[in-house]
Image (cartoon, rainbow, N blue to C red; front, side):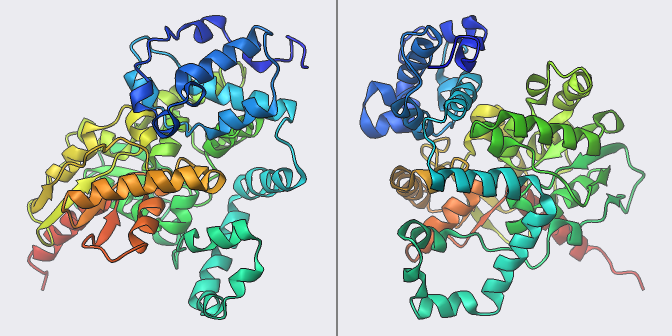
Length: 443
């Protein structure tokens, strides 16, 4: 058993653990509690377990570790909590304690955590190389041939189940679509911003990053987009590797000095939620603490920033379309950005917004939850897809790459009237582009 000095939960400010009043307001909004109706699978029960370990009444066991990783980390409980419990800090500290005590260790788990979390997602060029390999695998026909010949059955069962969920990698990555510095064409810049391209977003949805730059240019921003950006560290922090998260935060701050910009723009809900808390992550680092505070002060989701600067409303749209909006958990609950993406959508001429029931209910993606907990993630995906289909909308808008992939995979399961899944900023960029097409052409 770890000594009290080593116990990460015990090292927390005890008032954070005491915040929970056990009122139960969190239970109806917790997806895992809704699944099982077991107290330990809800935020209140998990906090009770954390407090018992901090008090030395329980040891950090394998059962505790499995419970912490059964939690989605969706933070819906934080929106419902009347006491303002900082569940995000508790959740990440508990997972870090699980990793410190090695209660979930196995050769297979350790290999994947090392190769993916510690190696692949700390080296952006290596990640792009892996992405290029996946792209070649698809475009050369090897993927289709492997499926036709049923060679995927030679894979271990878990990998065989994951193969259909592999993201469709773009032909070009963000740095091939976006210049390091871009200026608005029709006006002198009134703001300077930096755009974060992300990891999965960079590989699978580079067009979202291009659209983000386009709408910022259309609103008078000079846009800086460093071509090789490190992972923000959210994957690491959410999976108990706090030291790697801190190292990646320092690399990001070395690359992008917040003092040089009016805002730092994120377009991925999960990344943005973590990026906003660099001040907490590096609060005791004498070299980076002040810069991290400035970074957190200037971090904005793209929809939030557009509303903040009173973005220009487009005057036309490519075609009328019905749209419904799925809220990324970490954008809605983590960043408290909910109305702004809807404001962007409603500002587009021809868009008819159909609200979705349980719009803020988790889709089951939750970082890598759909990989580690496929059964529960699958049920949440089905629940989400049912609600989305019932809106009758033809387009689903969402603002997080994990949600985007999860919903796309849900659509592949059967024929659908839903034609596409898009980021709100892509729909706005298309409307601006439609305006340009209507302008008189120079002779």
